[in-house]
Image (cartoon, rainbow, N blue to C red):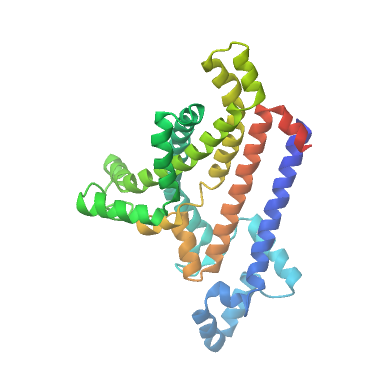
Length: 327
């Protein structure tokens, strides 16, 4: 087991290293001066004309001076020290902006992961264990519809109906401001209520469809048919044979969702004015704030890799046969 852990961990480190290298090359191989992409076109031409010394200082700070190898070494050194540079959109350290956005993203992502996983798993097991039953005929079309409708459509419709018409939730924002203590917590939860319900609905629908597919597939395997032929009651067949094997791919899927927990929901965060990681990434790309966009890409991709690693380790612990296949 120790060799397996070391192997998977080294593969994850290699993947993260490749991701960081790609983020370096993407900016360097874009048309034009890489420094222009990092500080902005207007500021670049302004400094080039009126303050070339400052432009040289910025080139050295962002690792754009010297050969490509020297730039790469400076870039890797900065990344290892969690120095992602300065966001020229607000002149704050990129790491500070990311940590602030992560806090707000977790308020939406963490409950979504938990409740979406539980609801989708339980309902998917019920539908998959009794395919064609009354619950399956009702739940599957409903969740399939939700899973195929774009989130921006549901978000706008929910905002118009629940926030604008019924005034049950605020139209946008994360807090009303000038509040402290329990009143502040309650106000944040009030603002988070509508986008959180939408995210849980979408996450539950995806998990439902996957879990139903896993259970239906496992329920038709030979060992399940044999267990029934031996006289085991339905509950024992479900929990001892079907659930144990159906949970393996489902756990992997949940771990991948855990890896995406810091990526946020770009569309919903933009619609509801929620300043999380999704909106930070969107703002970094739209405003050409390349240090911010670069850092968001690295953080999100790294979390996905670590989530995948966690899923592999959990599945290997549940079923040792997977470990043997991967070796």
